[in-house]
Image (cartoon, rainbow over all chains, first blue to last red; front, top):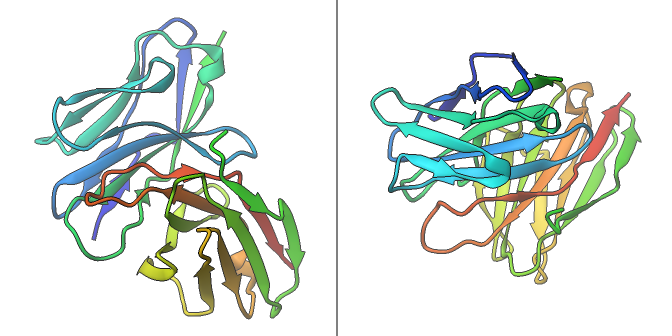
Length: 116
Length: 115
């Protein structure tokens, strides 16, 4: 079975400072990893994904994430936070092996609050 | 916006009733997945449809069923509603190719309240 852990319910960062939202995962095969963002009363919006290749993945709105296989982590980062980045962030994983259910397994989410 | 639409936006039902939720996928996408997001939780995978057949299912009972139509739109049906079925139901569309790394694009969701 696959799982995702987001250890922080909430992360507070001052505007202009770097931010990190943590994610660790567990999967049997090679992981396909995703980050999504959810604004109030909205669906999830895709930010970035790791399938294979470079461990540092760049995505939308200046976000990036670093895949670390030995630590089974996929932390979301941004060099300089904006107030508009305040939202709920979800990490998700899918087993890269074929067969079985093809859905994503999500973490519980992390509230990111950027203070002016 | 992703181009994935869902209807209705909100729905109130009573325990024991049945409900149908609808989803139109993004143009060019052939796969639809449904998720249940309870308050304060991450989305949980219900099932996925590809070529009008169920292609994978999460840990949900048979009273959760679905359909996919030739135009790739989809329905989620829930029978014998329970109070715990109250949640945001999300539909996601994607393009299924040979590998499993394609991202899913989510609609705005349907908020279901069961009284």
